[in-house]
Length: 483
Length: 87
Image 1: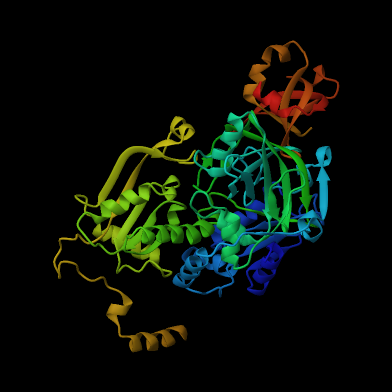
Image 2: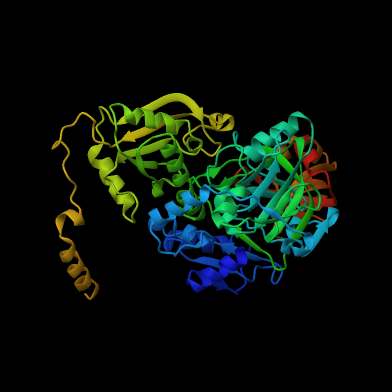
């Protein structure tokens, strides 16, 4: 599956609107997508076929991965090849099974790689040949958002594929946000810079959309997202060698930008309206020198509108990351039943439903999560009993009910005051702390039943399945649908 | 005349003496048509009369726009963006 196949599937599912009216890359298309997220729950994707100045040359793809808020895994279902309406546990099961079998990519020749349909080198490579969107009025420049950054660890050969934002500075320069502890543009680039050596990179638009999902998952260190993308797809990705370096890129990518990150160079990056719902400010970041651009005919550029209450980024991360956390917890023996994200918190508020096997278990669980990579992106989690179903479409209402009725201020608030790592995007930190990437505390809301309680101490919630027998519910549903 | 270029307030302050005395400066400006940066050799002035081919220059401070009556005459574009930004 490439982006074009994915778009065909969305058309068949009635989830895509094609817009042939001229629209500008400068805020206009983005405003439409933003309205889509805020008003229509972001369920419909947009293909803009007539971008001002680029008609017939390139297209914009808005709300590419946006799922309904109550079913954040719906687009993941489609991309995984599952029925669109498959329930959460079906998607989770497929993720876990396919995760066991990563598949290394296979290399194809340039003649078999659609991404090599056009090859532009050196001074002819011009980023402004493509309609990179100007997403928000307050942004520092035009941005690539749902693109894959590829870079190799100079010590180990481990290649990282990650979703990182990139600001277009000029026709042949980019700069991008670097978050400490991120593998590619953070840890790997620091190694090159310490050696005063340019770092080769590729910045990829498109390919199999499952790459975006794999790259957006909190995978362990030392593994390549391309292998897991192949595992999730259940067939290896096809890759082709870049023109100007030894990295390999998806053969069916829409656009591939190649170049080097120079050591000891910085340009101002940002501001940018981000997934946190806030405008992240400007800061000096590494510089990407562009040496070559290869692309398909009439390429498609997807984009994410950060900060629109609930959008593509949440759909992607809320589908993939909780399953990875669930897998880690079960692997280490924690009897958790399910893991989800609180959708209104955008990317914070991890919810864990779990058995409570011993006194003090919740403290051990909280400590494990605080040391997990997921904690880099959010400092709050909510732990609920195993009998709280957080898998269905009404998960969030149920979690709020638990928080409203089971938080005992004497025992329910677990706070860790160590200055833990945070990202420069963390709104609750001041500018200095955001720059250092450290300083937030961790917070766990313990909504579970105390281990010491006796039978009868916990009272049952009022739920449809408790109130009415199944045959009564079935008859009522039929009558209700005809009202 | 509509604004075509934009510059950060901090850069104006950095080159204030040169600008006041009518000297050439080498700066980066944002080309608002492309929304991208370009390094230029230019003259900047508060009045269009001081420049032969004046183009309006928008001055911004982070996310806010200051409607300064500034103008720019661009002599040539340069390919030394990063060097200028970091100097």
